[in-house]
Length: 303
Image (cartoon, rainbow, N blue to C red):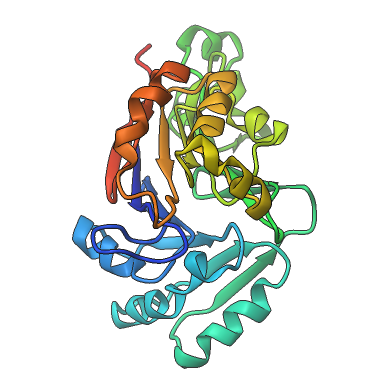
């Protein structure tokens, strides 16, 4: 099971009832945070979740509405007696930006591990998460993210017996470990059937539509995408500022054949995104005008 919470849905500035865009996921005791604008830790507390188990923070880019909440979050984590390192991932400049922000968060009791991207695509394997970061098209270097939770094949006792795998190795092999016994190395594929469908979430904001987004979002159970503007007349502004309209996001969701589309990163001028959702559903029926703290538990498909 993968828990997904869209903590905030606002772009540019926080508003009453609309925090700045941030996403939090939980899987197998490990949490991830993507972006953390001003006030993110407030929405985490309102949700009833904890920052203590956040093992990694991923940043799309370094505009203030996506990272200005970081010092407060790190201080809250320090006050919760965290001592384990926190991994940070993002475009070039990550160390410089974070160190500047952390002037007001000195003396943290845990290490910050910096991982700056250099390529069009970057891959991260962490605590059961398989993450792809991919460049999008904003007016500064910006990345989207796909989070994938793989699922191993089903245990096949006949296959295990045919491969002469000792029973006492079966349990560890089902957990994904290689096992060595009496000089023989046994691997999980010797007892498992074909890999099963995993869980996939794609998150992207602050960008024009791109083919790369469609490709990375294909087959996602959930596609979280900016809907900065709803009025078709705002398309010129979206092009100029390298953002996206709700219609463009719906068109990408349809092409990527995702399970569900959640809009986020609304312009402050977009007071009621839900007013436009009927029109968007004509393009992509499973579109949702998400509100702060919208949450879903994604479950593996039953065999």
